[in-house]
Amino acid sequence: MVIPEPTIARLCSMYRFCEDAGVDAGRQVSSAALGRELGATESSIRKDISFLGETGRSGAGYGLGLLKKKIAAALGLSRRRRTCVVGLGSLGTALLEYERLGPAGFDMVAGFDASINRLETLRTSVKLYPAYEVSDVVRRERIEVGIIAVPAAAAREAADSLAAGGVQAIVNFAPVVVRPPRPGVVVRNVDMLNELRVVAAQSFLSDSAHTPLA
Amino acid sequence: MVIPEPTIARLCSMYRFCEDAGVDAGRQVSSAALGRELGATESSIRKDISFLGETGRSGAGYGLGLLKKKIAAALGLSRRRRTCVVGLGSLGTALLEYERLGPAGFDMVAGFDASINRLETLRTSVKLYPAYEVSDVVRRERIEVGIIAVPAAAAREAADSLAAGGVQAIVNFAPVVVRPPRPGVVVRNVDMLNELRVVAAQSFLSDSAHTPLA
DNA sequence: TAGATTGTTAATCGATTAACAATC
DNA sequence: TAGATTGTTAATCGATTAACAATC
Image 1 (cartoon, rainbow over the protein chains, first blue to last red):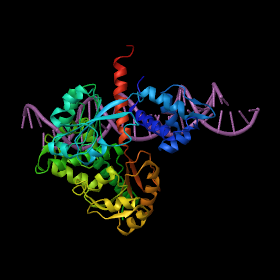
Image 2 (spheres, helix red, strand yellow; image 1 turned 90 degrees about the vertical axis):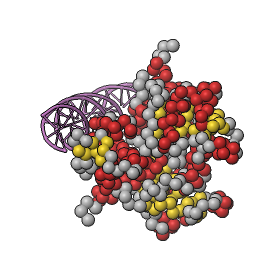
Image 3 (tube, chains in turn cyan, blue, red, orange; image 1 turned 45 degrees about the vertical axis):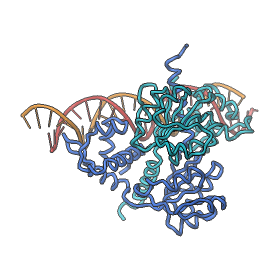
Image 4 (cartoon, helix red, strand yellow; image 1 turned 120 degrees about the horizontal axis):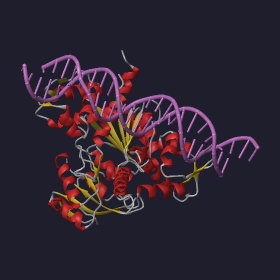
C-alpha cells in the first residue's frame, strides 16, 4: 500500500498529538477536532486515517490510543533508531542534546565535526568523532538516521559518507539541496533560512494583493 | 499575479543559489542545470521562472545576476526586515546569533524569554526582554518577522503576542501546529522532530515495499 | 430512536510534466 | 547556419474536498 508523502507528514503530526494527549489515551476525538488541531480539513484527516484501515467509530470519533498504535504500526514509528549528527556548530550541538529525541525513538549515539578543537571543547555525554570517521563509525555503530548540520559546502560530502556507512534516512539542515546519494536512501531538506524567506515573501505578496495599485 | 506556494519556495531556493554563486553574477545557467542543483525537473524550473516574466535567453540559459534581481523584486526579498526570536533555549539562542540572517536581509533586533534568569545569563549583543513584553516591544521596534522557539505549550500564545504587536510573518519551530492568529498573518510551521519521523517513516515504507512478503 | 461521525466514492482543484514552436 | 535552450500550452497526474450512505 502506497501512502502519499503529505499524508505521511500529517500522520506523523497526528502521532505527536496522540503522544502529547498522554495520560488520556482512551479519549475520543473527531476528525473535525483533529483538523482544527492540525490545521487541516476534516475530510483530509479522515482520508489520511483511512490508510490505516478501520480506526474510528461512527458517531464517536477516533480513540487516541488506537490511533497512535495504528500510526506507529503503519509507519514503523515504534522501532528505536540509532542516530547521529554531523556538524557540531550551534544548531548541531542543540540537536545533539535535544531532549525530545529519545522519547521520540531516536537514540543519539554519535556526533561528528571536522574541528578537533571543537570535539575537545564540547561537554556532552554523546560520543564524539572527527568527521573523517563518519562512514566507519556509522557502520560499526549500526546508525540508521543521520542529521546534517554542517556548512553548505560540506553537506553533500557528509551525505555521501553517511550513506556509505549504511544510513537509510537523512535530514539535512544545511542551506543547500542534498539529494539521495544512492537509491534507497531517503533525504529531507530543511532550510530554516529559506523558511524565513518563504514566509516573508508570502506576507509581501499578500500585502501587494491588498494594495494592487496604491 | 498569484504565485503558487511550492513555486515561492523553489524561487527562494534559487535565490539562495544565485547568492552563493556570488562573484560570478554574469554566469549563465540552464534550467536543466538549475534543476539538477535544486532537485527539480527542468520543466518546473522554467515554469517557476516564467512567473517572473522573461528572464532567460533561448539557447543560453538564465543569467544569475538578472535571475536574482527578478526573484528579489517579485518576492520582496531586497527589503530588510526587523526580526525577533521568542524562546531562548538552545535552538532559540542558535537562531539569535545565526550569522547568515543578516546577509539574508533579516536584522535580529530582539530576543524574548520567560525566564529572567536566562535573560541575565545570556551573552549576546541582541537586546533581550521578558516574554510578557513581546507585543509592546514588537510594536515599538516595528518588528515584522517573528521566530517562535518556545516549548509546544507556549507557542500559540507567543504567536498571538507577536501578531498583537503587528508581526506579519511567523516561523514556528515549536512541535505544535500554530495557525495564523488573524487574517493577514502568515505562519509556517517547521517541526524538526517531525521531519526526522517523516524521513524514518519513508525509509521504513520503502524497505517494506522491497520486502513485501519476506 | 435521533444525532453524530465515520469511511469511501466521485468531483474538483491545482501542480507537475511533456512537448514543441520560437528564439538566440 | 546548426545546436541549444527558452517560454508556453496542453496533457497528465495526484492530492484535496465535498457529499453521503453506513454505522454507532
